Length: 286
Image (cartoon, rainbow, N blue to C red; front, side, top):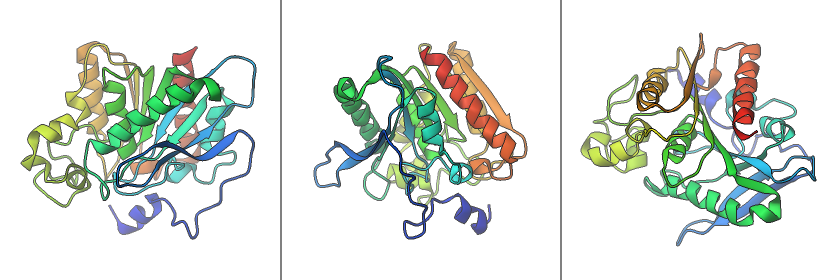
C-alpha cells in the first residue's frame, strides 16, 4: 500500500481536522473510566432527538487506527465529509451512540484496550437510566483495528452484546496474511501485544477473534473491501466461516474494488454499506 493511501486513511491532524458540527443532544468528552497512572478515559455520546418513547438502544462505536492512533469520533476516511455525520445519522435512526476512547498500543498492551471497552459498557449500564440508554440492546460497531476490538467484545461471553457490525477488521493475529508477518516485532499487531505474535502465541490466540467464536455468539455483519491491501478480506471470510461452523448467525459482504477504508469504492457504494449496516443494527434491537 502506498504512503499516499496511508496518509488519506489516517485521521486528520487536530490542527487541520474539521471542527464538530454544533447540535443538541451531543455530550462530548464524558469521562467513563480512570486508569492508575494514565489519562482519564472519555467517550462522546449522541442521543436521539425523540424523547418519551423509552430508553434508546445503544451503538458502541470503536474507532480504528492500527491500535496505535485514531480518534473516537472518526468512522473512517469515506465518512469524514458527510453532513449530517455518521453518528448523527445513527442517532436519527433511534440509537444512542457512544464513541469511546481506549488505550492505544503506545500506552498499554493488550488486553488493555479491550478492558477499557468493557469499562465503557459498565459505565453506560450504570448511568443508562439517567441518559435514557438501554444497554441490554447494544450493538458494537467498529472499523479496522476498532472492528477487531469490537469483535472480541461481542464474542466475550460475559458481555451481552445484541450484535456486531464489523468493517474490514483483522480477525487472526497468528498467521501471515497480506503485509502481516507474525514473526516481526514491528507490526501494529506486535506493538499491540508487546512482542512479535509468534513469540507470544497464547496471547496472539487470545487476541484473535477467530479463536473466540462460540455457538451463542450474537449476530455478526462482516463487511470488507475485496482489494484491501492492509487487512486482506480473508480475515472476514475466515471469521464468517468459523461463526457458521459454530452455528452462530453471520452475514458477510465483500465490496468489489474497495481497498481499506472503502478507498476506491464509489460514493453510492459507501452510502449503501452504511445504510445496510444501520438496517442490520436496527433489525437486531426491534
